Length: 562
Image 1: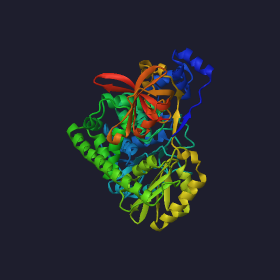
Image 2 (image 1 turned 90 degrees about the horizontal axis):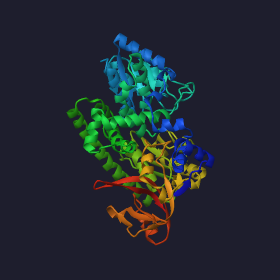
Image 3 (image 1 turned 135 degrees about the vertical axis):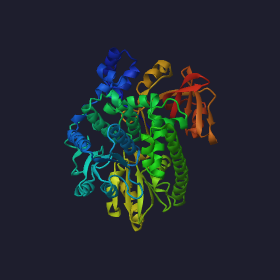
């Protein structure tokens, strides 16, 4: 691990914020590192308000979208709500369809099949709309590049409204409205919304025309917060407000489908991290193992008994997904070892029987073991399909462009991509990808980096500091959990390996006579000797609360020790 300490803000800026906010210098430093430099900005950060949400009509084409939906309702047209099969797509479809159905009956949903239709708007979906007399399709979390599909729909007399958050191409589809804050001509003040966030702006606009307030739309924010967490968009600006209030809904009055999931996993208070690691994988598992429509059915169900049945099925999908992902990861690691490829710049593996729904997860697992750009291939029809994952700081999309002569199709972004190629192209691609990456990657990027916010002394760690840090939540990109480094630590004699194969590290440490403070380092069991060799050591950690027999104590959540 590389430890990189963030630059400390200027002393005069820290002093000014300490004076304005009456906080400790450490808290002022953490706020300044997050771009918060005034009392007003701090107030908005610690106390997000729904009134801070922007007027949805500031988004390009919003008025056109609202007008077309109102016309469809006035004429009794059938509306098809279409979305991708992942968490952002299925929550978006659940959000818009349940909102429209609350006052208009002629609404149905459509999620494409991951295996027969692939990502985004599909010809099969448009044919379904045509066969069933839908004259308006609202596409969410996809569609901004579906130029040929939207043209095909237009020939059949079907209009499109697109709600997307991906970067558009040079040309936009010929839709009635394209809602996408990343459009070059869109002056909406915040462009980091997820697909469900754009969908929420649409119901905010529709609601404003019906006299509904933002308070009336609060029940939909559990879906938005889940999509924000799962889609790894920055939790800043408008996303922070939406996630903050969405978590309140999840923990106080979630929709029936979420309640059914939460009751199954028996978790009381959920953070955004819990949403990412507990709720999102279960919603995703439907599209990976069976069909994304199962997730929409769960998220729109209003009868608890029925929702509990759906949740049970989805739990089984998730268990099956976990078993598959574990099995395939083991096979992929073995393939790398047997081929003697541990010391390459890339990991590229292939087996024709691997399940297409989990190869993206397996690619992520492989990057945890061999920290380098990774592709996992499987057979998909007549071609091979792959999921690509990268390491922090390296653009895998650019690297794939350097291999384009070996690829049939590819798409994605800096850290994750998908592609297809012919089986006979596989070996040439594998060699070319290794060549491109080895020639362009900074070797330092092949060592994982931990970014440290601040040096800290144990004397400054207190319940009061912990109370303030908890108010920095919800955490995510753009607002990560604060990470600290402490030096000259000493083991108090209680350090040991714990868990299966003693793969986790449990410690009790002190610093300059202050302490002891307990700590846990997941998957750091192999660092036990660093702690117990009677030499001072340094640690990187976040602060956490440990509850044991009703007692709450502060503990270090270790990330690395040296």
